[in-house]
Length: 118
Image (cartoon, rainbow, N blue to C red; front, side):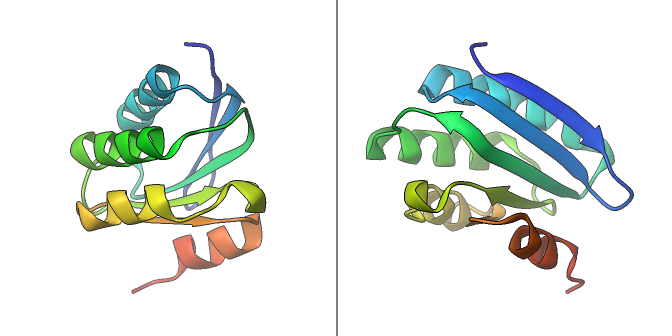
């Protein structure tokens, strides 16, 4: 995998920090690592602010579809990304396929949504 992944267990959630350069195969490997880590947590914070490069729309679609296919339902995923990278396409693809995910540009907003009881 060309991405560096750091996983930290917090009191109420799992923090998953991803760094490196965007490419679809590496992002799929990161999702696979996330799947393995999610078994003990139902709330996961993904920090993608350390990713560089450009992700084309087809790749955003592909990773949204892949994540929705393999990640557990009933788990909340909050993703942090740089504001200039957020266009909600990944989020829409994954959400339309049943994944409970939000993409925002700061940790406070991500945690507010993630830790809010429904």
